[in-house]
Length: 394
Ligand code: PHB
Image 1 (cartoon, rainbow, N blue to C red):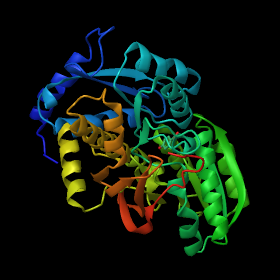
Image 2 (tube, helix red, strand yellow; image 1 turned 90 degrees about the vertical axis):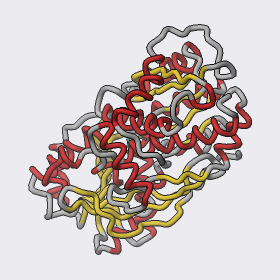
Image 3 (cartoon, helix red, strand yellow; image 1 turned 180 degrees about the vertical axis):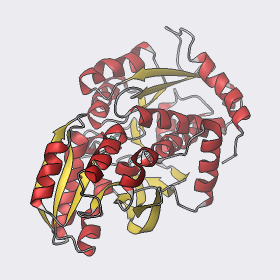
Image 4 (cartoon, rainbow, N blue to C red; image 1 turned 30 degrees about the vertical axis):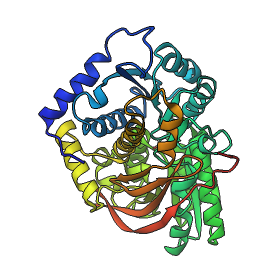
């Protein structure tokens, strides 16, 4: 990837982003001079930072195309989905039908993503999911026009149980938000943990996006499990990790999780994150050339370190570039675009990955540990893990 300077990026981004502000109702799609790209992401609420990192990463990838790629102008449209599933259908309709985009990049929250998939089924709009892990999106509800560059909720915690048993933690408690992503993450953890000989003694929930953890921390202290595993992300992950330490549990009952627990939030968590072990398809510390150059570019352009969400957005951009190259920038050739994305191999900062038949990354999972404010890689948790894509017949 070409390393961009802050100045270069901003001038190129101006070409892209400035046009997104124009009222464009009634314009036709990309068969003309314009490629219309929609972002349906959370820009407010507990996942706001995740949405911004995804959009940044995506634009960084497109920036490598230089000015006016394929002779087209790129226009951007944005909807703040607030991570609110109740508004998902309306928001998806706004961006897919009213804004009439060629492709939507979205979203973070599993429940919102399922609303998008429903609308994408009706409209046929190309969708690239840059985070939300809802298993059904690339499983029972899979569609030819929906791709994912992140993970399925089944993936990150599939290796975690085995790791914990190997570390001698035979009895554990799982804590999460009560919504699709939390429940699917837990189900996958339970399967792997029990198969490895572990016993899940308690499942504890808080409603999404609540961050009142006192009651469950008191319960954990009295249950005294060998370890705790969890799924939290964004603002909720900051609060949970700080509260866990403040309750005196840090270092006493080891804390594990899917790696989102410590992504993009380590600075805010400070010393309370030290020692947390997680499984994820990325680590800041990966030493491959793509990651080194990506992290340098990202930080110099956006002024903060990249995280897994930035990588997933970046890879959504790399995936779309393959579709743009195959169609010479004309995404109205949907079949050609889909075929290109189906055959994609992505040279990602996370390591090289391939698209599965059900449109989800086949990728390596790393075991990470927070040391001195960084997610250090301490091993491989699972090589080339492929979601089973249950119920998908693409
Ligand atoms: C999800 O809702 O699917 C989700 C949200 C945030 C994450 C991971 C998964 O970090």
